[in-house]
Length: 243
Length: 335
Image (cartoon, rainbow over all chains, first blue to last red; front, top):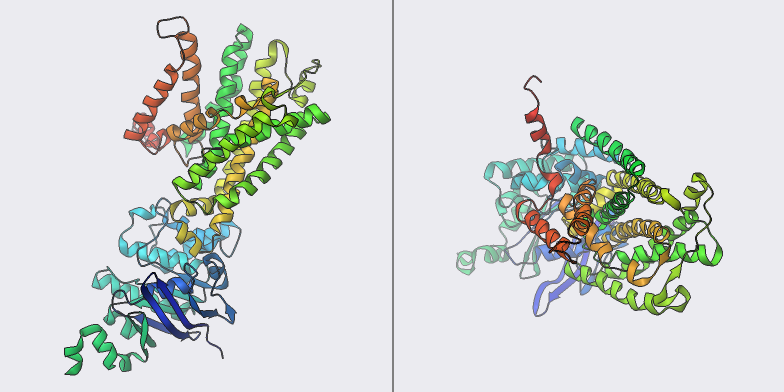
């Protein structure tokens, strides 16, 4: 069976900076894939190319058999890809509920139906009781949950989480990991998580892809990837790898 | 909200009864002030769609006020089409024209979008002043029909004689009420949610499937439709359409100021703002008319002061003040 998403030799540069060089990866339906790498490795650029905010200079991106290399973000969302943002982008002046309603309106034109769906998703993501709070007043952890709820409201088949756990306390991060597992198990959504914190990604992911300076340096089971020479070198430097 | 309901009923009754004592007294002047308040409130409610909900600063909506006025006037003068049919045509023409003109502009954001809307207005002025078919700078004059009873006057939107001011006041009240009701529907519909999503974060909105360019065009076309309807009413009230008048900057600045003072992004914000601001200019020009302060421009100074005070102390507008809490405080503590 063809993978749900396949990125084929995607290259993207900004002026002289090569953010992604011929990156290829495939995500099968039902997987949780971790995309890791040091800061500046090109993880977010790859996300932006997959979700249509940027278009690769070369290469191809295929989702569910259709070429989305040059497709606009709103079309890609309609096809079933949703994302969250590294720096949260909640609709600050709207209430938490209305934020999620906007997502749910992607699949219905009826506001009442969208509100019901949004209420369920706020419950699911643990935001019950905060429906009427303006999104700007929520804590960072709640804003990240709100973004996840809003993304889920568009009924995605593939959910891309850009550092959904960074900046959170250990307890909040643990809760976020639990939420990601529940999304995968209960809503049957395929997930790709970007993190630079290894401890979060390793236990969560079925498979891990490592980027370094825009190049894919490893792709495999978490246990294998952490022992990979190149990965250790990218994260810890040469001396540690030689030992 | 109960207080809101009560305020709505009182406001509606006051608006309906307002011209009657004046009519008995024979003062038509303050009925015309009321007419101008209603037109500007209606324009503000329309501008709120693009400026308040969608968050795109549009400083050129008066173009569509002019498009509406000219469309209905041309249909009436050249083809003898009735005012109300002309109004429907004007609304349609303005909405379509706005969509075509605005689509390319939606690539621009922030200040650049605002500048582009002004540019379109600047282009419209020489066109209005030189296009022979629409009368050039002379404009168009609407021939008056002989009066034939209240019903006929209302149907042709041509009021005359001693009840002229009252007639136009009620015509404006009807158009204002229809606009307000329609915009209340828009606010609660998918459109209202999508407009505000684009205002708060365009990228995030696109990420959940909102076509930001399409919805900006829809928002501005709704604004244009409201401006066109008001333009038609104005044309029949003034019995003439000429470029300097219908393309005047104050057709956008007054509604925008009213919106900001009352509460931008709130359905009733522009209404409150218009009720406060518009009478100021009228009252000042009558009371200071012969005094030492006579002359034009005093009202603009007062407007400027009000805007400065609002911007400094309550940028979200007067409606955003905690009215509910204040009103509850005054009630005896039984509940």
